[in-house]
Every structure is written in C-alpha cells, then in structure tokens.
Image (cartoon, rainbow, N blue to C red; front, side, top):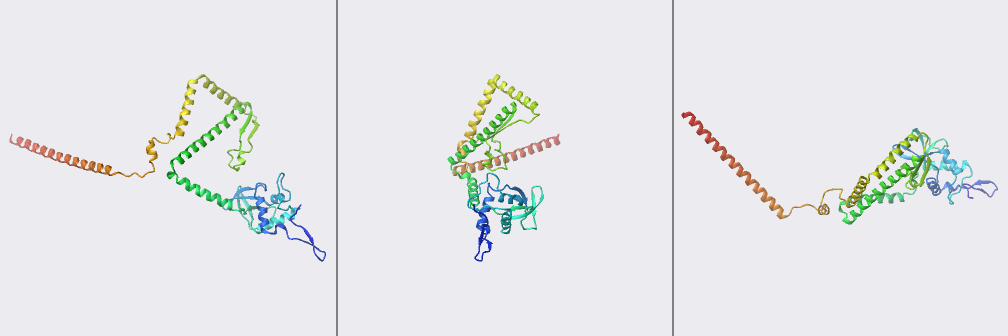
Length: 335
C-alpha cells in the first residue's frame, strides 16, 4: 500500500526522504476534496465574523488521517498515513496554504480569529477550502434563470400557467395527505404503547435532502408515564369513530363537502369571482374604444346641461319668492 512518504538511498549510501506526495498542491486539493466529502471527518457549524462556517478540532482531524472511522472508503489515488507525525505535517501544510484557518471558541456556536496560525492538535480549525466551484456556479445560474422565469409568470402562455396550478395543487395535497397518514399511523400505534414514525427525519432541517428520507421508519416503545395520556386520547379517538358510524348523514355530508372543495380547488374557482373572460384578458391593457369615449362625452355634456337647468330653475324660484314677500310686506303696511 502506498504511503505519504517513502525512503530512498543516495549514491553515497546515506538514506534520505523523498518528497512527500502531499507536497504538491494538486494532491492537497484531492485530499481536501475527500476530507470535505461525506466520507470525511464530522464537522460542526458556527459563526465566524457573522458568517456560517464548518470547523473541527485538530486532534480529530489527525486521528481521522491516521485511523479513519469504520466503514470509510479511502480513495485509491491517495496514499495512507502511517503515523501521526506524517498526518500533522500535512495538516501544517494545509494551514500554510490557507485551506484550514485556526480559530478560537468565544461562546456556544461562535468562533473568533486566532493570532496563532500554526497547526496544533488542541486548536480549532475552520475549513476555508470549498473545492471546485463549477457546480456552485451552475446552480447559481439556474437559480437566477428560474427566478426570472417565475417573475415573468403574468406573460406565460395559458396552458403553462394551468399546468403550474395543477402541479402546485397536487403537490400541496400530497404533502397534506402524507402528514395526515403519518400522524394517523403514529396515533393508532401510540395508543397501544409504541411510537412508529414513517420517514422520521422528513422535516429535520439539519439534514441534507437525501438524509431526510433515512431511515424509512422508526419503531420504539413509548416512554414510561404516558399511560393516562394514551388512555385519554384512545377514548377520544374511539368516541369520534363511534360518532362517525352512528351519524352517517353528517359524516357523508362532510365527505361530500371535502370532495366539492377539491373540485373547486383544481378548477381554480376559489381564487376569485372573476369570469373566465376576465381571467383570460387580465393581462391585456384596458383602453376605451371610440364609441365608449363618445358615450362618456355625451354623458358629461348632458350632466352639465342638467345642472345648468337646475341652477336656472332655482334662481327663478328664489326671485318669485322675493316678489311674493315684497307684496305681502306692502299689503301689511297699507292696512
């Protein structure tokens, strides 16, 4: 098996060490790619200068290089380390090329910069090496294109918008159905005295997408002291089942209402009370035709004429009232 260093004999008979395999930076990158993969040593997350980073202790890194954890598949293109001095020398080289950076613990989940730059097994080291950025750049480009594509949703063709609507509704119903089934199975078995979860890590945000589906199920006995709670929940559950059986009309009405709700949901009638013609023409600019403009103009003219007529009638009435009042005053004076 290849090792990190090998001995050679010179012409004068003295032994000297050949250059290490990890003296080349390309080989160091290969080693870092392996250490940063899932096969590498476990890391923790923390904040360093308001940035989330991954870190590990120097001793843990050296132990992994000398004796990897059980089940680790060491790459065939990387030589193994025979002893701790070889592993420590490579770790110092990683710090020298700034693939690792030493840090200090300042609190729970918080790191600070360290004045000491050299590698030490008792120190904490932050991974600076991020590997090949090609995949990251491609994902960023795809994210930007997808964002612009979603922003342009109002100008999508009708069939594509309908497809997205059906896809979104189907995904929402699937998630709701999955959560309901998981909770129902857990409730039924929990009443008996066991905890059964289908996809127990499905909503664990600390795990990756693939690890969220592992394991498929978990089966454990309930903790002691839950018997009163299980009895209470069991009585309530079976009471509901008895009500559903003895009141078929109400339960059937509930089922029919849910069916109508699903039909309306897929038809899209729950969103608004707009007509189909208004929905199809919602993105078209709303401009008045020539006939509409002429009608509005005639309406304005008629309104103005009506207001003028009303004002003239009011003036005549006020004048007549004044004349009548004057005549009455004169008659009173003559009497």
